[in-house]
Figure 1: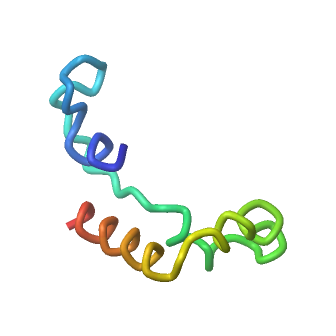
Figure 2: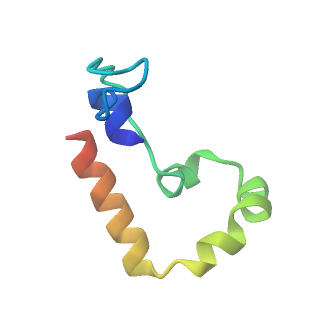
Length: 68
């Protein structure tokens, strides 16, 4: 999805076929500091606990690479 937002639809089947929007994409984990703590805990707290620290770090690295 992030690459589609940045580079356009890679399948050339949809309305964004070949249209590079150049939009930045973020993984929800990257936005944790922007979301009120009580809302985060209620909606994402358990899901975050399921992800190991290494996986969270890998997700962030991938998103940085995609945005580069």
